[in-house]
Image (cartoon, rainbow, N blue to C red; front, side):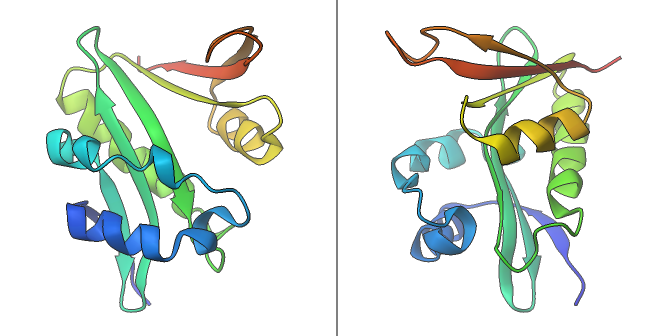
Length: 147
């Protein structure tokens, strides 16, 4: 089945939330799926769509300091390991560059080994920042220049 990358809309976000466990397993990250982000930054929020539904998505935006920030990226459980995450990142990177981005950034928890391995595989530098998300809440911060 062919997969196409489209701009995400609020209906796509609702579909993703209905199928949340297929993307995130046991982790409940629904609170991070902000409708306002899709409404305000729809030109940089993406879905990977096929005949059988949304296979993956990326919610991101470009900041005033020209950073393409990826807030969330996920692929459906039956599409992991197919390169779809990389495809979504490539599409976001191209869009962010068109909007003036000169770097990419993402964060994850220090225990999220899958995300750390994924971002390292995409060539991101990473460092642990203590108290990034509040006292006692360190995060791994990923950055990559777009030269």
